[in-house]
Image 1 (cartoon, one colour):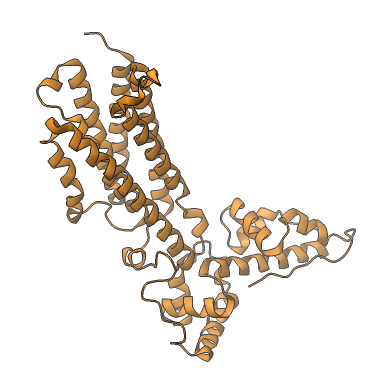
Image 2: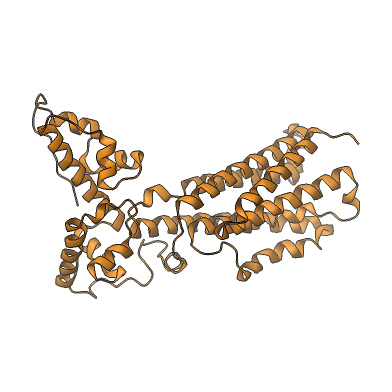
Length: 371
């Protein structure tokens, strides 16, 4: 038996997917990732058997796998967002199209149409879920920028492009006379190589994110308004008296500023609510009504105020601390986030702000931070 370049890539994908299972199976939040890796192993095994051992003439299985991947990618994304197990028994309906397709492969055209619909429907649902996650974290966490899932958005786009290429290569036969390469073995090798790259990146980023972020509460994500950026159960405008909101905000300010809670790198709305003895929703409403900001922006603005104050102290003294040390002291845990927020709040980079505070600088430096 002679092995081709495709077969070698198939073995590589089996090995990488097997490693992915070993790295993720012990983490409940990454169970969907484990299932996706295990499915990749099965896909490549059947793919190899169909090409080398004549299994294609017995039972053509691999087309059905195109219906397995979209829901698994969706569930992987959900798992890295939420606390708790990433795969539950109630998720079993997501597997039904794949299981049914296993017995419909003689009608391969039907399976292919279903696979296309599944690819675009689940990808769109995943992007929408990530969008809600970003909104929810900005309203509830001070470290929202460090746990953003932009990498997952990039992976989904990559996955869709790869899926479209597979559709064009396998199904759009009318294009082959105009682009003969699509019908060659090289195109197939390229397809497997892209799938291998996708799995490698997914394993690394999913494991890394799982260690960085413990997960958001499922009820919070489910109840977050998709268009308004407000929880679906949020208090309607005018339902709370303005004076009460101002009073609540004073209590929030007293604990956040007075106890320097903003300097906690992973401060959450829940922690502020407990310290101020308010409901979490009341915290969001009070901050929004008094500052026009979400929780994340409000806390970061306070951090920038603190950094600016420390910069002025250093400018008036004999020694200067490193800017990154000031950022960490104020509660930032990422240099890139600090730089971006500082520029947004002051209109200057940190280094330019420090330079403007030096005695030789022309004109006073503006230290106003918008809240």
